[in-house]
Image (cartoon, rainbow, N blue to C red; front, side, top):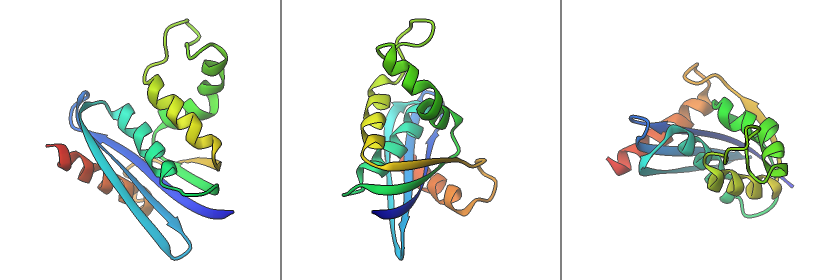
Length: 144
């Protein structure tokens, strides 16, 4: 099983507004840069999309160390999603989960791999996070 490091980030100019996502993947000597954008969108949707698109780009089952600066994504996957699934994609207050289309897509992609989640503080000099942020902003520029 290939070992991959992935850094993912989203960006939004206004919330909602034009947004972008970026993912930077490293596997041995190989790297892959991915980015895209949507308008209008939200920052949370772009954070989720970055992770989904990065994982979707992997052609076979991989061991992925996934770095995000979004507590929304990390906590969503590790803490909230199991409960949402048991409750039919409803929150503890019985309201529909926001961005359920993306959470379901993320759930399917995570199931394909062995993922270890890591949180990094955004804009703190982490080279991988800075690269993912650069790609996300490139995605924003595509839709402006």
